[in-house]
Image (cartoon, rainbow over all chains, first blue to last red):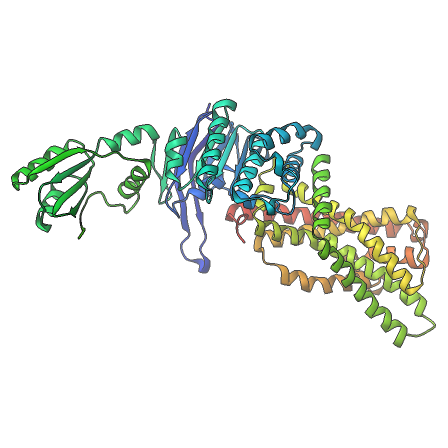
Length: 333
Length: 255
């Protein structure tokens, strides 16, 4: 059984002045299995935050249903909340005039746990996040990285099946960001909890998430394994270097020969062509055009692609109003 | 629920200590308000009624403070939590938020009873007037009066949940509360419909005239109980409606 089950969820918000409402989320469906690490991604204004808040029971959907561990968040909101915890605004989710330990104890109490019964878990989490030495210091005096780790510790203390994190590595230095990623990996691997991450930090998605659900224009545009997406896009992107330059007319012919994004840069008088093709086999058509133009090909190879590039391409291609094929020329002196 | 109450009372007491200058300035402000009225009674009031007027004033100022704490603090809590970013975290608890807020209000009142006792002592010392403290009468009177006040507190919380920036309204409300706690219930039968008026009138009679619980008569107690229960029920209903609306419009994370 899926631990998160989002079915045909839609949400619109009224606009001031009585004009047509804004459709934030439009018929979104997806499910997440227990123990999975999933990235919920999308550009700003895509409907990601509304989706997250509907999963957390903080926004009621207009239609459709959200179930956490099989429990409907609309009809049995409080029962569903026993199975999900979230870090929605990072360090802003904490009481800054309380110490790290007091924060953990307060949130445990608010979920109905006594300080005594939570103490072992509080100590374990402080140790896990290397916050023991700062346990009795005010949150306001902690560094941003420590505050972020404490906010995650607060969510973990709830011992829920699902942990949802909005921008868990935002504003963290490389070292702390890595540390947080390792903790999250451990939570899924060792404790079997489901982790949903919403982030703009694509290296985090590439490193941590097994699956990516990409939302754009209020709709899901991609729901696939990260590894599969990387492979798919790696096999589509090619780099060709010519022994000479090309003109604007040739660039247009190259773009017309294939469906995808073709960019041409000129470096030291040589044309450096990057073709991101919708159909990998279009590379032959591209080579034929170059041969027809009498071009001298110095090198041809695939481009190593990262998830950030994959994300940009997916959003550009599949988002409502996105462009599917472009021909661009960039010149460097 | 006991753990939620404990956690919230602890939070209020810790924050009160950590924001000590705020706590001190609160006591100083109320003492200053008392002094202004007390000087008025001493300078321009009738010497024959000065003692009775002063007792009336002490109890009214203290009850005003109690009413502010009970009715308005939760509005400030919602506004502050929304600004801090912790309101959504409260809403992610499996314990219904209205119970968390009830625990926060009760904790706030309990912790502020220490401040109220300090203010009462200061005012009595300054005016050199003694008040009656019959625990058997004051305890049920306070409990019932505060119950009704908490109901109004939930209505204020509803406004804060939907509109967030309600500070100006709360400031205006302070003067309305002053009128409510100062007016005797005997002034008009319509005041039976107002929150806290019957309770504060009975408390004032108990503390200034030494009236015991038996002196009030059954009808007064029944009217107080009905008024308090009605305002608590109405407050919870209004809050439930405001909460549904806030969840529908996605207002929890907004400020």
